[in-house]
Length: 385
Image (cartoon, rainbow, N blue to C red):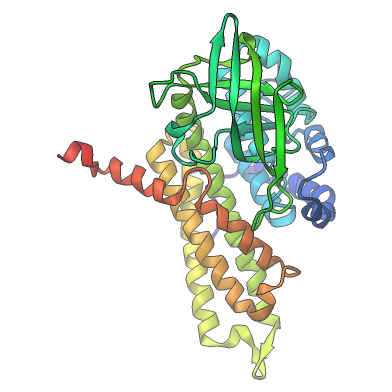
């Protein structure tokens, strides 16, 4: 189905982005997966093309373009032609906006130009061993001592944990309040900062995911983001875009797997005819095609609502839940239609399948998405007593 949300400028941008991912990312993808991380140089190249933090004001080196559709295009083209482990959207749209919206002018001047150029790679440290989707369970603590904060604790499953230069770290600042959190900018060169191992994962092999440790790390007042007791509110508000980003990537992944499988079953033969000629293959692909088209309309509408500032936490939860569930369902069917080949990592459908499994977990697990949606319907035990 023809998509209606893009104009000529977006389509020209897509053509340019496609060439970038085909020429600068795809040739290195297998090596990056083996290494467990991408080359830092790819961020500098993306920055040179103007693909990083496009929302940033021109005075910081950005394009001053908040239109999320450009980021949507980058995500879609990277999934199809590049390498999903090149997690540029984490840098540009998951972490960067914390600086852009909460940072002081001094903080923006200090960090944003390097981020736009790809010289400073960003990460965010929220998750802990006992605090995944439950942000209020964070135990890492920051204690004010005079005009500095002392940070102690550990984080896990942190994207860009190995290659990141600057991290937004969530820490407890009010010991007796579940939501009493602060956000702190931590430079990886700071004394007391330590990277753990690069964690071995089921999928997303090229995207480094690590443990981080903070041992009496001194954070100056100038590295506090916003109000040091309103971190929970900030994190919750920024999760709206994170869930939309997840939805865009999940749907792009499902569509890519579908297209690969459609080509495969037209060529692969069994019992004297193409696999695609069997009724089961036709029915599976017909249903997937209809669902993908319908979901694309929904995602695109959410993008427009987000651009207009109207996408709320409930709708972000809905689109994240539905797209990631559909991604898993479609890619599972695609692996099945590939037969034994679908289980082999040399076939891209296998990598798409294992990469996709985490999308139902991160950005808030899908069980949490159902809780959010259910409560929005008035189905809240606390209010129904």
